[in-house]
View 1 (spheres, rainbow, N blue to C red):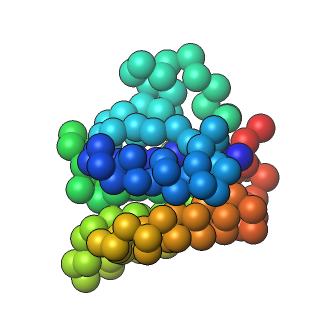
View 2: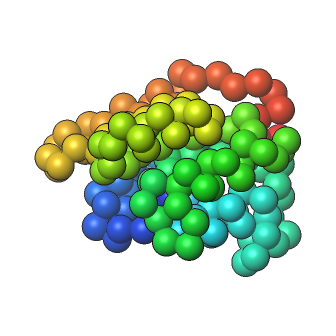
View 3: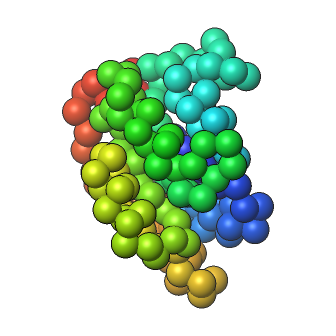
Length: 146
């Protein structure tokens, strides 16, 4: 069960990876660092050309404030493609803007999570999210890894 983490902040990426490691998910996490790289990974383009596009992650943890393409743009692209439109996407962001939340849900986000500033809260949040989206959540067959 792969998790795709889309995070441009190295410090937040490191904290997330520590949380994933403590939860036993660290070997199943792919990290991309900007919006275009996320799209390339999911649609097997750019440096990911040749990647099996049917090998989809169980969930995408997507930051909103990203270089090249922001997270909301990434979400809209993924929702328009039949191959990726059902993959669960969690907007995991420091943005607490109502407009971002509304646009995120209108664009097809499955969840909107505000990153806490407290280190221990963040670790607990990542562990809980990882467990939920990889162990308990069920997706239709077409959205699962094949």
